[in-house]
Length: 157
Image (cartoon, rainbow, N blue to C red):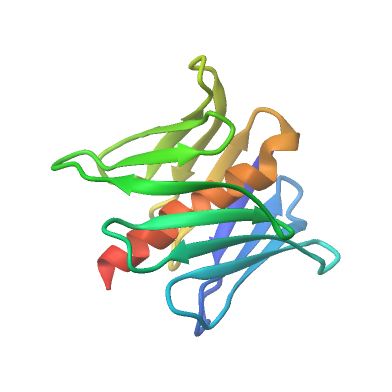
C-alpha cells in the first residue's frame, strides 16, 4: 500500500492530506492550537481516529500516539551527534534512516520492513511517499511519520 503524505500549502497549523495511489484522500491531519504539536488524524469520512501529541518540558522531543483515546506508544528523539536516532515504544518497531531524515525505513524487532518513507524534494511543501507492507499498519506508520516530521519542523524554527 502506498500513501502520499502532503502538507497543505496555506495553513496556520500543521495540516496534511494523505492520499492513496488512486489520488483519493484516505486521511486528513489537522494541527490544534496547543503547547507543542498536537495533530489530530481523521479518516476519509471525517471521523477522528488518532492523535500525535508532543510532550512538552522533556529534555529531547517526545511524541505520544493515541488510537482514539487509547495510548498506543511513543517516539522520542535520542541524543546523538551525527545521525538522528529515534526510540520507538510501539509494536517493537525501529526507525533506520539517512542523515537528512528524508528517506528512512520502519522495521520490526526481527529486522523485517514495515514501511519505507521517501521525501519528494522538489515540492513547495513537505511531501513524502510512504510504502507500507501491511495495510493494517498504515495508521501507526502515519503517526510515526507525523512525529518525525513535527520534530524536524521544531528544529527548523
